[in-house]
Image (cartoon, rainbow, N blue to C red; front, side):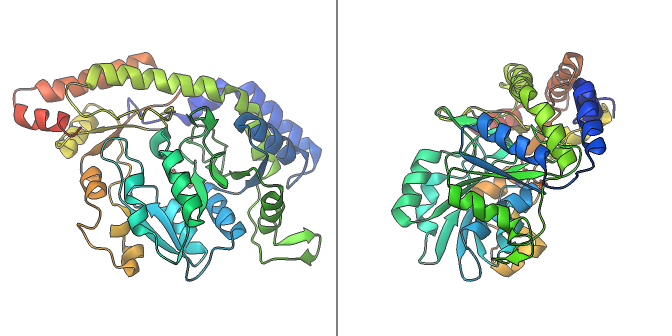
Length: 381
Ligand SMILES: *Cc1c(COP(=O)(O)O)cnc(C)c1O
């Protein structure tokens, strides 16, 4: 595509010298798993977040799993989450044997509707997984109040919101745990898979370190049933090299988002920024009832767009067993039918932003455009 959704090669080139230096340093060290590089990244990332501890692991999915496992959540337990998310938010819950219970989302900010949480709490509920989707955080204060009233653990899914903050506190430091993904396209991305769990509890940190490493307290002494989920030295070194650039990259994402917002706010529904959270625009998601038509039109202009996500988790084949049907989560379902993610990444050339804006304007102002549906999209507010 002429206008790609993202460009990881451009991203590599933006810090190539530092990445290459880290790569060669680790290769020459002869130490590739759980060494000084992982520890250094864990310390620097904890410093960046302003939290007590970070434990590296192999992916965002396993970060959520490890946090749930550290809370001893398992079969018979219920965990509250949204269906409008990347499916790994849900599969991590299933991996523990617990049952995901879906809460609907807010219409324009796309995150969990905290007002709908309490109705879903039962005697079996053990935890909430707020997903900070697209780069914006769930309204955490009321969620944390509810969690403490009901004795629930809170595991933030920060995969899409690394660097975002809520009343001055960084995403991943408000709940009991924060789960991060360093999948290459994420705001802080590795060059392969990677993840991390943040916590303020020394005891939880020790537990996480055992769980990610076969349940070992020391070599060949297995205290708990663990898995293999480690952040390798190579990825850790490359993440350390990139961490100082994260805030700058997020600022570039915000700049592009503001350009889209200014240019598009009168023709489509643009994302709503909440008052409590900053937005780090992992994704820029617009809404229009003419979504499918618009996507085809943009593809015809060589502009790549994606849908995050076309089928909500509760309607996926794998989750049929939970017994949900169409209509159970009305905002989630309506959202899935109207959203479109536009290209956004820190290195995106300004000329590309201009081309995307121009094409969307032309689509809505072309002769066969129906002005009533255009208005309808704005009233999605
Ligand atoms: C990417 C992502 C995950 C999973 O992270 P991986 O590192 O790919 O396992 C989980 N939740 C959300 C919201 C994500 O976007």
